[in-house]
Length: 130
Image (tube, rainbow, N blue to C red):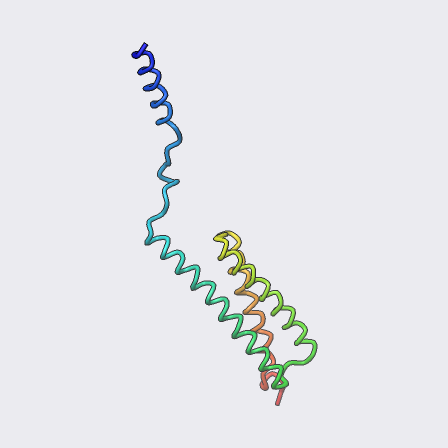
């Protein structure tokens, strides 16, 4: 009787040990790699934030200086709103560690910044014929 109990407990232990073991792909990345990726993500977000602030300041100053007419101001405002919404999505994706949404938002922000700069840069005095 004891032998049967012993064999059954060995069998149960063996089966329990054969459960799902973590594979190499499921192992966490080394801390250095995680820190490096986090630093890159933070720098990307900081770059987009600073680009947004610079484009916004440029557009505001150009409007105050009288270089931007009403039609162009509407276009710039629409781009600025889209850029701000994209930046908010990037912040939320970063905070929730959603890499796909974060990358998409960062990639979407850069062309919007370029569009604002291009619209404002085309309004200088040389372009107005003064």
